[in-house]
Length: 197
Image (tube, rainbow, N blue to C red; front, side, top):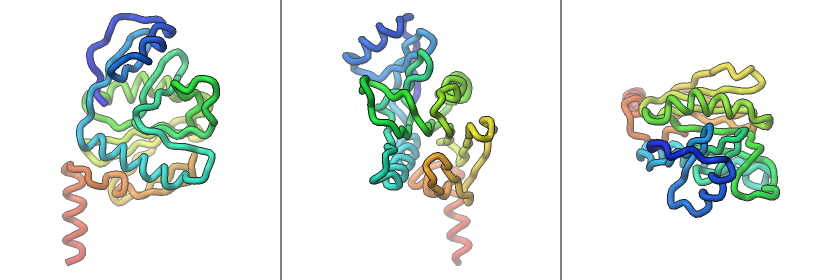
């Protein structure tokens, strides 16, 4: 989701109190409140694909997948990841998660910088987090970062399989880009058609 111009500085307590009555979702980063704008259709499709695959896989397990309406606390900051997996029961404060296992952000021109810099730094410092995944919406490219690999980036493209070790799930990149309308996906589909002829 794209972010809108920053609002005035608030304390963490002021943000949390005001967030309950806010008409729009707002993230809280280094004391600034940033309103979240609507997302492009491709962004929504990718996030829905990820959530659907995760939810189906996690049925009957203690872990649960959430979409962009669930806040995550990272230090003194609060974010709305596109998809997050948490394996702890909500304890005390149901307004946000504090122990995510896996976070997925869908990148766009307006979110790429913050998702790959500030959010990356805050997310990887959450003790429970095992994997951080960045999925491009305008091209078919997935970056996986894992704690066990010292957050080194691994890249996946159409035709590849990507394994989410934290939840023991392997998916094709094509499944995650189902119904997405970008040049990479069109070319990949065309190549498959030509292969079948």
